[in-house]
Amino acid sequence: MVYLDYNATAPLRPEALDATVAALGSVGNASSTHYLGRDAATRVNGARRQLADLLNCSPGEIIFTSGATEANNFALRAAYARGGVLVTTAVEHPAVLEAARAVTAEAPDSLVVLPVDGEGAVDFKPLDAVLRDREVGLVSIMIANNETGVMTDLRPAIKLAHEAGALVHTDATQYVGRLPLDLAEVEVDLLSLSAHKFGGPQGVGALFVRRGTSLPHRPLLVGGGHERGWRAGTLNVAGIAGLGAAAEAARLQLAQEAVHTARLRDILEAALTAEVADCRINGARAPRLPGVTSITFPGVPADAVLAAMPQVAASDGSACSSGAQSPSHVLLAMGHSRDDADSTVRFSLGYATTERDIERAVAAAVDAVRHVRSIMAATAEP
Image (cartoon, rainbow, N blue to C red; front, top):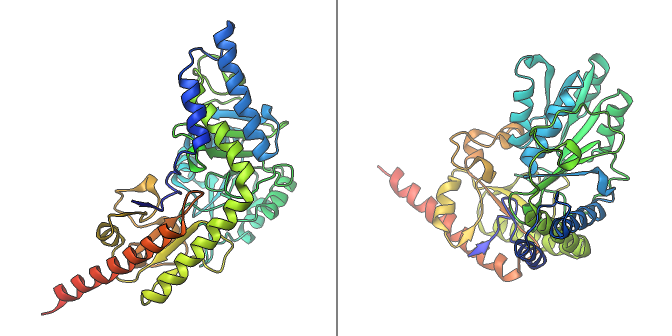
């Protein structure tokens, strides 16, 4: 297999595997006071420090969760409890959009969804207008899109929101561990992430809550006093240890991995646009994550292309929405037709992708598109 689906989940980094296995080989509840419990707590605290180093924040500002979906739900529910309107964008991951709809279900007019342009860039003019006209409690804008890789400079939105007294949350699931993110400079109040997007294990993530943030105590899970009372439940020591090791490995390799994946993505895009007639790169004129490309092959169903190249692992959109009958809400928000949205394949690269992987993927994709087009042309003949 050629694995080009890092936005769905990245391969487990060797460092994360070692840390996870080592923690699994030990016994102890991180809340216990005996030696084995303290050993587990040491692993958790070490991982908290490793993640804090990656984000340039304090370990005390990190709450471990089961992943970004839980962190997003937690952030939106707690922040919305402050009162005011909740503002988000049309291209958010369902973990934000559906959470936003759920928390505002009893007052749908308190949810404002910002539009994007044809490149997927968020229009901040409506945000300025909403902040002037209404009391806003939270602004939630992802820093990098999971389908197109289009990135958003959050600083203008943060400035506008903070001047109006609103909190700012970002779903940074696709960004963390791929590009530098200094939380001393990007002054969001809340940030969600998942370990498995940057080479950690699945089923573990975190929510960053900036010290001093006025957030009502509204945990999703209640029970014991774990994570300073914010997230009840015995800590996933092995998963957290793996997250920390992946964060440390990503931090040390960040610059060279970004250059590596950007170069390979550019090779992939150049080859496909040269070999496949009419194909289009979505969001090509916007700043994008280095390892993500969303490519539309007009008139060729993406699921047919993927089926015709079984040796390449890619996606026809977000893996979290696989099997859905509706087209990508992200591409529709960018102004694409339903047919084009249904004809779009996402390739996402990462730290272990090689040039040989790209060569094989290009050959497979070109053959697959031509094969599907020939079948469609034959079946269309009278």
